[in-house]
Length: 346
Ligand code: SF4
Image 1 (cartoon, rainbow, N blue to C red):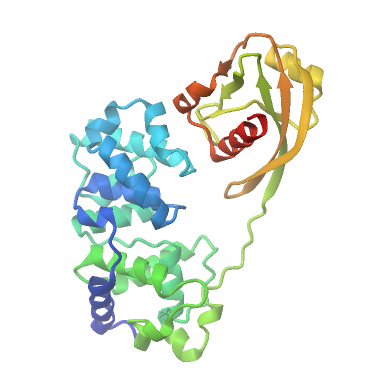
Image 2 (cartoon, rainbow, N blue to C red):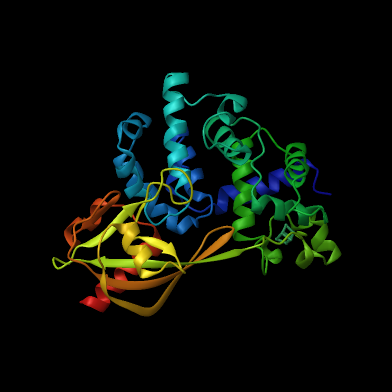
């Protein structure tokens, strides 16, 4: 039975001997731990390491991040995706400055009210930075506890979080931060979704799914996400100086505030596109090149077209030279299209 002290002792012993080295494990600074947790949502550890170090080098304190221009901050996030994370983080840090004198509150309820902070981030930051007893339940922890208890609860249901948080709290030792980290580490390195390494698992003797032979069917996850695909034309409009037309996405919403080449519905005619851009276009080329970009709930299918123009940019559009490329933050899909363009055009 895992609900014994031996369980947490076995897990913590293993963690102290085997934990992977990560830059955010070298600090107790709640700002840095908070940043690392925000970066790690939806992103692999190995990718985050490089981003984290560069980010902390440029924005070592909350003050430095608050003082920074949003566009510059976005540059340091470019490629990590899910850009609302960094915007919310900067807003949350600003709230800490304004409401708590620049000290991350040592109170989970107050911390949870900050912009962008959900129950997982609250649990991770409060326990790792301040050793407060809060559960930090992510996909790894759902999986580990489903297996430990041979629990068939559906992790796709909205009730799952509370169900698994209660399980974590029932066995949480005094070393709350290490315990939460150890659970995540176990899920990431040993109790993995496919082919878990049960033979090397430090808590195998406490694991009911291992004893029952049900590891492969835990956790249970029934709900399917209905993915939708949207097809767009992406317009590479180039003038005789080799400048390309770009525009900024609305601040709120998907990829808010990032820059892109004009993107229009797939059935828009040339005349409608010219009206929209306020310029004459000629020499249309479809490159028969489609870039796919996957978000959590939807896909973009981007068909790339090349147009020439001799007109100036109007309204919300502007022309960007090659040298200015680094002044703008583009989503991954647009970077791919730009690279394709450079290869194609030479
Ligand atoms: S014994 Fe296997 S299934 Fe059970 S916790 Fe360990 S790795 Fe996961």
